[in-house]
Image (cartoon, rainbow, N blue to C red; front, side, top):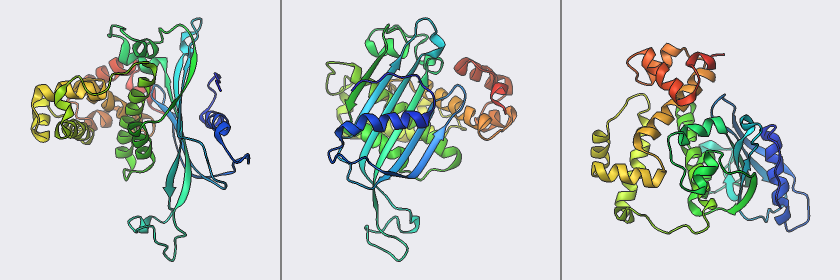
Length: 320
């Protein structure tokens, strides 16, 4: 089933995802859903998302499914967007947090774990994605889609591989709160965007071009380096320091990071800092001075220049 529709709001899109996946619902019974968990973000110039976890009263028989919606309008480029929608099953939810480490054994205040249906919608505007393509030579279909140079709108359904599923699971199953949660969610959503774009390649080569990444220790070092960067959003760290912390050669670190995450260490770090700055300015209503200091900038002018370069906005534009 192919559906292309105009973006209105995330609740509507979530309902559309459910409608699409009802075709795989075997029992013929309309699924009744109870909302267990809801997370959303609507920050101007940033990623917009809506994540919902449901309890289905009847067994849900659909396979885990992803969908990419590429909305293209050459007459009104400001309306262009890329949207990712996912529906996964098989997770379990327990409202009793105090017994989260039990072996699924009932306690006095817990009725046991509840099977869930999880629905995700991630909305990327053309303005937001421009930061990744404005200085890049467009050499493949993925680049063309990110730059909105592909001349026709499309919707593509795709199955979920293990790495996509792991990212989606992490978005609803983590222990971060407050500012750290914002940093974590932004990083994971960029990761799911990167992995989802693989569905646009008809013949994707297996394995890594950097042979050292075939070693599990080297891959682990690359992933650890990203975690260290995220934990040091307000305390800039050099590549030399980073390579020492993860015990890998600087050259390998830079090459491996680019291959695994599709961006350079510097660009990734700057992008995450600016996304967090949007959150602090818009959601937490912090002053430009405070945000500049929290992100480790030596002056407000340096921060403002970096923010404008990255987002196309002035920091004061996001103050409520």
